[in-house]
Length: 333
Image 1: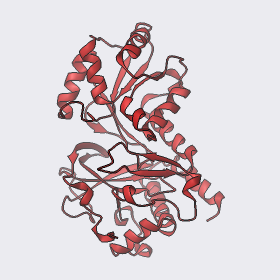
Image 2: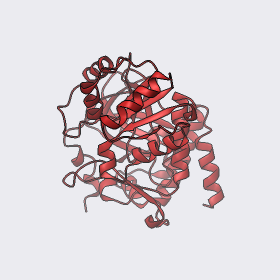
Image 3: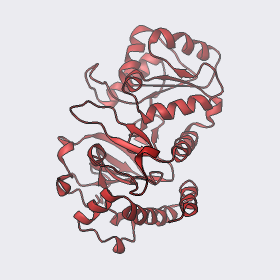
Image 4: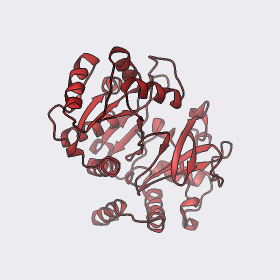
């Protein structure tokens, strides 16, 4: 395929208007990735999928996300030295996923358009980031995204902050000015903030990225959001659903249901049958994600998360037990 053809497909990704256009482009991208990504091609062959017979989204195989920890999920003819490599948070024991991103412009277009779809022009916001653990580990796609949004914002006070002593006076300053502000933070750091100070925020969105990182005991999302709402003096807590292996995000703008941009869609699979779709939306299943912006890796990923769907919106219910061992046995070396 010629470079101009890829550029046309990329432009189509961010101009999708309806389900029919999404389905047609998804099938086209499936055939493109089957031809160009060796690991995905091998997986499709292993599950006895005939690519020539695939005409609908429901027939497309979803690659288990675990392969990003051990395999090169990337176009065969492109050298990874020409890519930016993002890595998931994690430990040496569990392994860290690697996502080789060939074209950062696609990633930037995806996360900027998605953010502004839900929150408006980023230039109108002050963005305060409290993501110490992500900064410590490095190679974080979340840090890259937030850094880019910070640079696009129109306030010199936007930035990364490492502790409460740094961020508290800034937050109080922008809040007193009535400035439209986003405070995005890892969960344990936000809990640390409300233990140190009392807030009554009227102009600030609180967005938690999840994760106690071993600093605190885990709690349910409902319990967490109740604590954060009370501590920050806000009516709702926002969340982002993204991962290293994706180039797009879903957002919950209050509550526990995530919405997605037009180039991203979620499906559910039965817990004990990874190769079929779950037809009933009132049941919990494994989350399969289509992210068409993942043009140079794999757009069809079977995650380790459990969820429910309602009219295209997603609620996260938890994770698979021993999920690293599921779904990969067809391609054991």
